[in-house]
Every structure is written in C-alpha cells, then in structure tokens.
Length: 119
Image 1 (cartoon, one colour):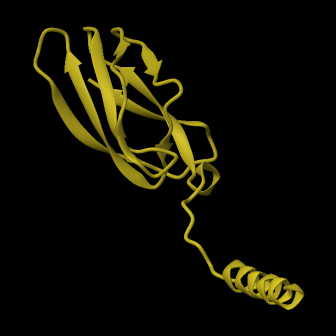
Image 2 (cartoon, one colour):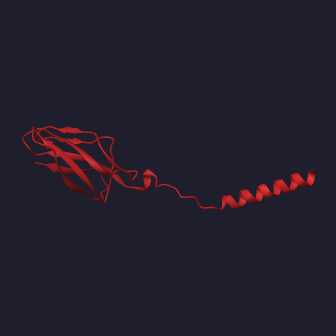
Image 3 (tube, helix red, strand yellow):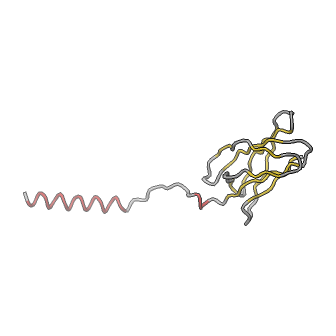
C-alpha cells in the first residue's frame, strides 16, 4: 500500500510539473490599449445629440449612450474610453433633423481626451 501511495504521489507531481509549463492564452488588459475620452464641440447654432461607436480600452467594439452638446458648447463622453490610432463612428443629430454619422480618426496623444467638431 505504501508503494502505491508513493507511485500516486510521484505521478501527481509529474502531471503538475508538465501542466505548469503549458502556455495559456490571455486577453489584453485595459492597460495594453491606449485610450482617450472624446469631447465633441458643437459649432452649430442648434443643440446636437451624439453617440460614439468604436473600439474601447478593452479592444471591444461597443457603442456609447447618447450625450447632448448645446449650441456653441462642448460635451465630453465621460467614463467612455476609445482606442487611440483607430477610427470611431460619430453619430449625431442636429436639432430636429435626422441622424447622420461620420467616421472620425482617434489619433495617438498624451492627452486624456481628443476633440471633434460638429457644425
């Protein structure tokens, strides 16, 4: 019985050592993707609502909630971070007009925000 326990213990150690050497895939952490918040400045004479769709700090393709930028002001999409050196869709609706969108490039920057203008 003692020899059987010893063989089992040795087999368990060998299995553990073999498995510990395997490389397991991991996902990218938030710190591996540089990201910024987006500020939208409304240069139009009417209030505009907007939302953003693109790659976030986790490298996931997501959309944001809708934010409001009053005429002649800027609004930041707080608590939403967008991957730098990539493009996002900036969806906006001026006043009572219909929704439209345009592609915007999010450049690399040392700042925490990048600014887009709507007219």
